[in-house]
Amino acid sequence: MLDQVVPKLLEGEFICEATAPSLFRALADEAFRAEVDAFLGKIKRRLTITPNGQAYYASWVKVGKEQRTEAKRVMVSIKQTIRPVIQFIELCMDSQKTDVVPSPGDRIDYPAILKSVTEHPHLQEKLREFASLGKEFAANEASSNAMLGKVFQQLEKAGYIVFAYPEQEAWRFAGKLDYYLQVITFLMENEGIQQQDVKDDDPETGRLF
Image (cartoon, rainbow, N blue to C red; front, side):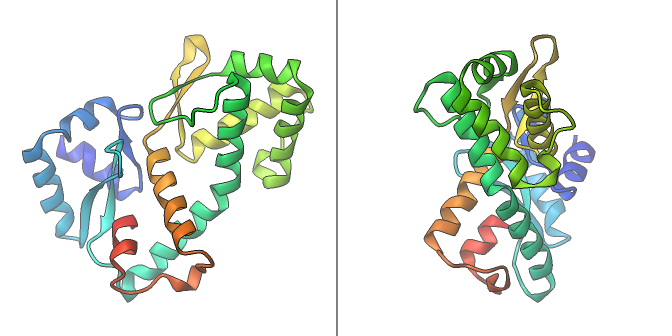
């Protein structure tokens, strides 16, 4: 099991109930977590769990000069996905007519969202806005299905959703969403933080990366 968990963590993946249920359950065992953590410690990494216990990932034991480049890269990547992820969450909530923010593990019914988008012009406009967030969100066709499919494809590629039920065209929010919300909180509490501001020995930065 160790040989399955460690490579995923070192590749930057988040292990959660939606992406890797068997590995996530294995990490519920304290002894196994200690074994994984000990292995990661040999390369100055550690096993970290998101605030609400929704996913495991590998972070640096200490963010020093050698690790700042990687920490900056991760921060830049997260910043680039802030608007698309927020836009997607809003689209899901508006389509379902709910004020409840989705959580990791929640189901995302593609046909239902597509139907809602097709029937409501303001949701179609929200969907079209994704194209302005980056060329990766631009669909080859102007149809709602093509545009929505492109959005789902990119969010899945970024690790925020998982295609859990192919026969029903349904996804699930992945545990990485928990990490994303943690980073958003960090950025809000450190308003104005810049890429260059990832500091050595910052305890909060250490918890994130």
